[in-house]
Image 1 (cartoon, one colour):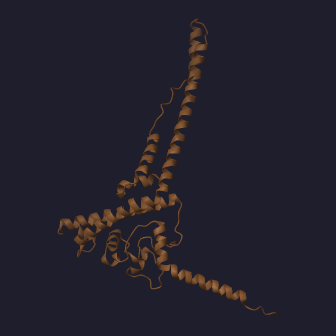
Image 2 (cartoon, one colour):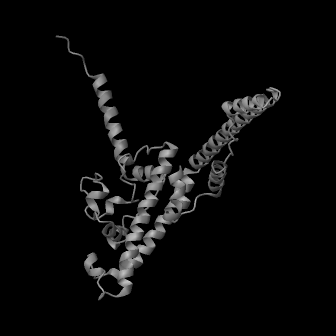
Image 3 (spheres, rainbow, N blue to C red):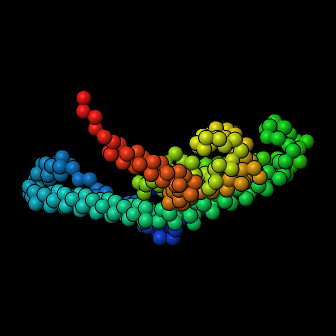
Length: 277
């Protein structure tokens, strides 16, 4: 939960106000400090009593006993205050988690997805400046290369980092909500609404995984995502429901045909004559 909140700044996304307020309550409670009571030692009180008697003064133990009693009461009060504060913080973080779980789809659709779209928009601007220059760092950072090209290359690296942060937040909110896709279990529609339009898409229709299709280097992968060839696949960040809907649009008919064939085979098998040997 904390990482989801803390990464909002580097990721460039804002969380729902209700969640921000709930988390602010939790952090305010955790920032409260309790001043511990001053320690009182039995030996010190006893030594004071010895000195008093040695000075021919009355051996009045009521005063040191009262001091000891007050110290014990202060310690107990401090313990109870700490228990109350810890319980309040626990309730506050539970409430914040509950708000996050209830707003999981809102966070994805209205916070993370727009932030990712902004990353892609900025990356397209970098791609225009880097066109024809390649991605070799030693060449791009050379003093002979125009400053705007060098700046674009460095921005591209920062955008790749931001994209990674946003996707990490996507994983965190879904894990926090304890959800899994019902149909898109292989992640075919995780990054794209129409993955079959990707360059190098498997002719079998099986999702090969992003690492089999995209460049490994962060800067190269970022340019790949915003390339015209990949644009046809519609890069996105979607809720599990949206991913399942996309999966059904592509595979739903074939799945129903398979089910119908299986049901027919079972029906035929059930009506087959039994041959007694």
